[in-house]
Length: 271
Image (tube, rainbow, N blue to C red):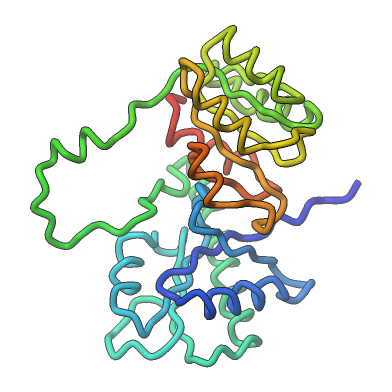
């Protein structure tokens, strides 16, 4: 049986589009005998394993100060900063051999810390904000309270070409008493949403549907207005503009570990 090699998720912070594309391409070419990596898109709901920050941008450094989480979710800074850092720092332009070596060191150290936490029964990776917190924010807290969406209750609906993913997810969510449903196409998905409360729909691009974005809009127009998250094999398959217009919450890159799916569902549901 072939083991799926799940890549480590990298969130780029503060890089212009051209530099971000070059970094994503370089990370995709990581040596086969070491960890593999994937750069998360702006629409990705997945929590990153590592942050990669532009050291020449002070705003990027401020961002990772509130986003990174020590050795559990570390940060690597690229470029001259002019300030003292608590993160490892590599010069620009990127020397890929040094980059791969430093990332592998961070990955190994992260694994050691997570294993230690797991053995001691302590909390694993904490949930972090996708946006940095302002140093001085005079906004009325009531404004933020109104902006927060209430945690949803109901089932998780997987729209996929087969039931394998939904069956595995159902087993992992059984402890929470959260039902997991499966639909092979749009007709079945809409019917299920009308029969019972559905909190989140995981809409796989592998499902035999003519227009996934149209189905997303139809699901969002239902009375329960479930959150819709696209599951994509490649970010190139995902059209951010159409997804936003259809009301999607965001996307996730496949393959996914069950704990990664749970972490995203916790943002929308009571688990």
